[in-house]
Length: 243
Length: 250
Image (cartoon, rainbow over all chains, first blue to last red; front, top):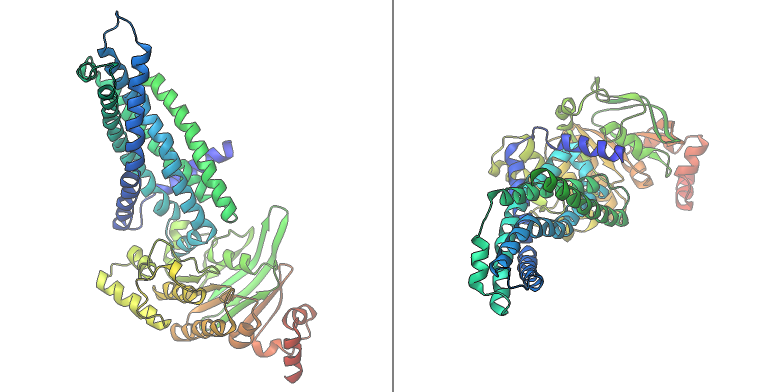
């Protein structure tokens, strides 16, 4: 455990050394941002709408009382979507989509000697391969989370419009009622941390792959599993500290 | 010139190299040969810095490469070209981008100059016009040739080649060998080739080092190899009936 932690930290230190040529690295960052951001937009959009809708229906189902205003459904859906559902569930899904892709891509480069080829050329392989992915993850995953929050709330609205539990106007009133900026701040801190966790852990797993195709698959699996565990742990820590 | 002094390499309890002293001269095809597990590729990886020797030193023109830090090695690395056994082309890049990749990172050439250089390198390996193909679209022999084109793009002083003929048919193998030999002569590179292909040994082996059990067992030229009385070398070189018959005719 400590061995892996030490090696992970050393790898990240290498990854963030001064680049050989900024323009080449910048192009890689742009490419990764498109891959992580645009490439994940579809799956994030789909899960967000459904999560928002389900959260609204379940909250409405549990708050059947004349003493509780219907608008509270919108408020609870908003807070739970912003604080937990959008950042955390999106991150767990992205760990599967983005994380496995990073681990298997870097792992394949390792077993096919492409990383050795980079090192022979004098390229800082961790810097060239890992830093653009981490930077892109840290930038794009908060963006995806913002989109996820918006679509989650839209999903809740659709659920209200499609059922008679809560009227859309009550839902909208609930959404705007007593909004605290700290909720959004916590969400963005979580999303940034999750972006770092997914990209760096999966890159670490891929970078130290040895063997062949079987080991590449194992690295991808390990990367996703460890990322998911660390996402949930970081979720707990950030919530405890900031709320 | 490259020199290795008393190179030892151990992986856990497995001692792979046991004190290799060798010199690899410029303008020569220096071949490292030996059976499977004899330490050929490990020695090559120690020379290029992919493995850190457990003991010993590697000198590039008398500069101690082994003791250098990553950043200190960069000027020497820029003079190194390497062809890997698997070619190690970057899958996500076209042939042209593979070749200009080191130029992008380490030169201030304009885009047009880089394309010109890529075209020159591709012509040199008889792959003119294949710029836009991706590695997945190439045959094994073409991948090797693109690997050579990438290796020579920075006009290296040192060329390393790991098993250039593995997975290739005999005719393509000879083409690749000839190409490496021509480049060595043309650019006066210090070329180090790891192989167990006897056609390469006999065809282009200006200077041959035979490894056995992690030690340098024999050293000489392709002309001397046929007349040696070294038992282990003879067992390796003349293992096939074809080579035994060829020896009798020599």
